[in-house]
Length: 316
Image 1 (cartoon, rainbow, N blue to C red):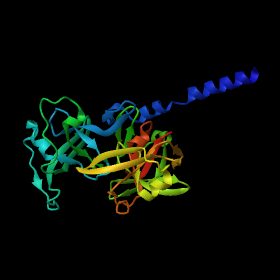
Image 2 (image 1 turned 90 degrees about the horizontal axis):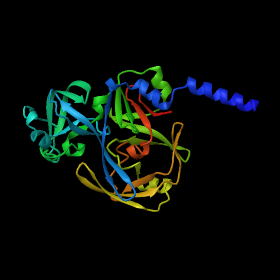
Image 3 (image 1 turned 180 degrees about the vertical axis):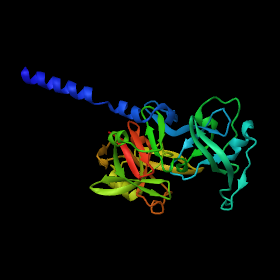
Image 4 (image 1 turned 60 degrees about the horizontal axis):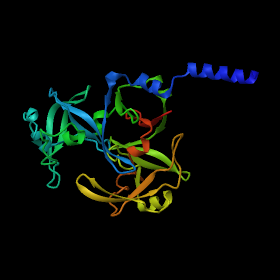
């Protein structure tokens, strides 16, 4: 009985002296640096699938909220011309053609426009866009984010900052500097950043370190890789087929359950699905990586991408 009493006392002191993970995250992500994000989903009889994450996006002084998909695998923040032109409040915008535009992907630029993600203000930016892309936004549509989407938010918005994505609470936070609370809250690993935007996260598989690009635009997938690595990581029994779209191009993805634990720093992941593209649509060698990891892998986590010091963190 005496030993039991000492144990209970010790535990009481421990819990009084330590903040919960949620409290520690809240302490470094106050409301003024935090904004809600919104999921696009579809449901089956047994599952809910998260297809994309959207942020509220306002340009200049336009007060009505529209949305943009978070896609940090892209360096640029991209706007959609047809969507913008259908919004009367944005008729003042001037679309300048870009010299590096191609016939297949004609581009424009809007100079000196203020970019705001909800209450988060990022100042005046030169923003790119795709000509004649997407669909007009209809005034009788409801407030679903995917039906009021005017573009994508790319990594250039967050350069030299710390981007925290809290998946359980559905928020992002943007910090300008680091602090001791941030260091204590997350377990960080050094990562690679290619072309100022692509986050390559070191993942240990079978004792070997591979680099996977983290792509917030790949919400449906925990992991995508080549056929050869897919065979090494999975049971090789295809139990899922997804017909997806990659910037308007149709891609058939074949999935199987993982057969290996993977590690990102001290964090282990198992029991997730791994996919490969049927027609080998992804040139991972050109992307300097071994595959892609998406939001599905982290739905129960809070993560931090430190663009300033090139680190990737998962909340302890």
